Image 1 (cartoon, rainbow, N blue to C red):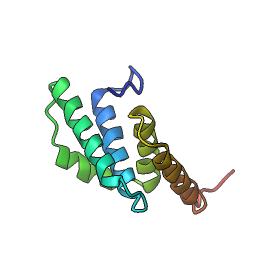
Image 2 (cartoon, rainbow, N blue to C red):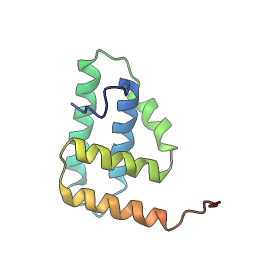
Image 3 (tube, one colour):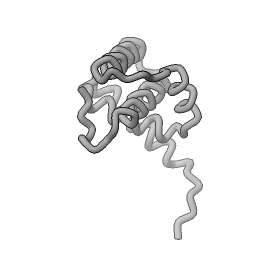
Image 4 (cartoon, one colour):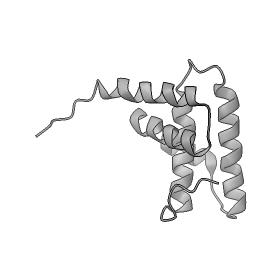
Length: 109
């Protein structure tokens, strides 16, 4: 079970897991992507069942698809670490996050 922090609600956990799923889905260069996505999806369903939650997963996916790539990849790194997914996937995600950082247009002041 993801124990990201006890202070995080189940709804927030679901958002992180789905965001992580979407972030990993962006990693086309990772050969075992489908296996990992299946594992995350099963984990998400287990979390929902264990907590007797009523959640429209499709609606959550559509909502979180609108978030930035940076948020999706950050969530993917969190999920990767908590589920002890392969280290090579973490490396790919961190590289993607670094690449995204090169294109930020934030004003620093």
